[in-house]
Length: 124
Image (cartoon, rainbow, N blue to C red; front, side, top):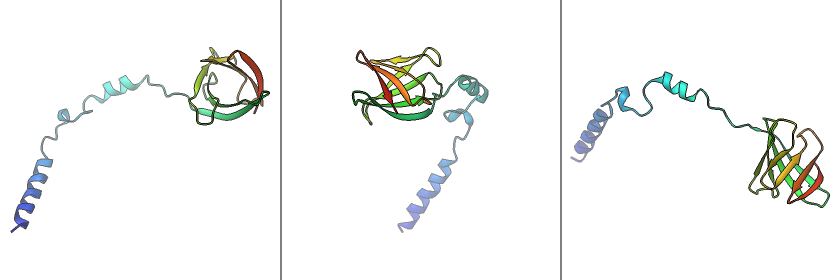
């Protein structure tokens, strides 16, 4: 006797699942050309091209993630610290941001890091 109500409820649920299948009722359905046009100018952020650890003359350690656009890096003073983005106006120029200034490139074995008004050479 208990199998009949269970079986009946399954049949009703299956019948209702097929209702209202038109495209207008679903979110995201509609004009794909308009969606493609709206997303055409979306640019992905640059990826990390190199991550290096630099030790400076006063034994400070800095962690630098160089980004693939060649004019942005993220610098941290602790391994899991919050990164500070530093940006250059164009590739090859010093990167600045927050309280940091970074001069160098990911290919170089040493860079110059200025932090809190103190500039020093640091080696990878």
